[in-house]
Length: 212
Image 1 (cartoon, helix red, strand yellow):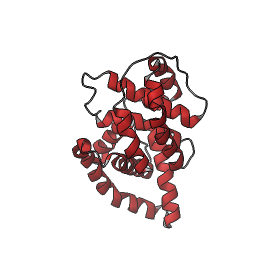
Image 2 (image 1 turned 135 degrees about the horizontal axis):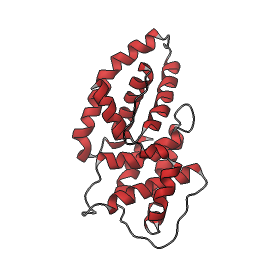
Image 3 (image 1 turned 90 degrees about the vertical axis):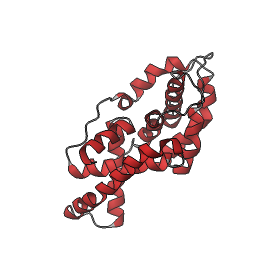
C-alpha cells in the first residue's frame, strides 16, 4: 500500500489549475474519494505562485486524507480500499484538472466533513488516543518517507512513535490484549478512528503536543 502512495502523491502535487468540462462527484466511494483528493491537490497547487515547488507536508496529507477516510469506512481500517483510492487518484488527476474542479470544492467538503476540521481533539481513552497517534504517524511516515523535502518534519513524528510505543505496550498488557492478531485488530481500529478526527498533520500536531 505504501508503495502505491509513494508513487501517486507526487503526481497529484504537480497538477495545474484550469477548467472546462463540468464535473460531478461519482457515486462509487473509491472514485469519489480519489476525485476529491485530486480536487484538493489542484486547489492547493492553484494557490501557489510556483507550480514546480513541492506542496507542504500538510497539503500532501490533506490530499491523502481522502484515501484514509475511504479506508476508515469500516470499523477496522481497510488498507486495500485506501490503496485503491491512491491508485485511482493518479488516474483521475488529469480529467479533474482539465475540468471545472472549482465546482467540486464544496461538494467534497460536504461529502468529507472530517477534512474541514481545523482544531482536532484526541479521544479521552488513553489507548485509543495513543495508538491512534502512533498509527497515524506510522502511516504518514510510510507514505512520505522517500521525499526528502519532508524529512525534517517527518522526523518529529517518527520520534513521537518511539515515545508512544512503550506506553501502548503497557496499556495493551493491562487490558489483556496479548496475541498478535488482537494487537493488529486494535491497531486497525485505532487508525480507522483517528483519521476521522481531522486532516493528518493537524491531528499529529495535537498528538505531539500531548505526547511529544
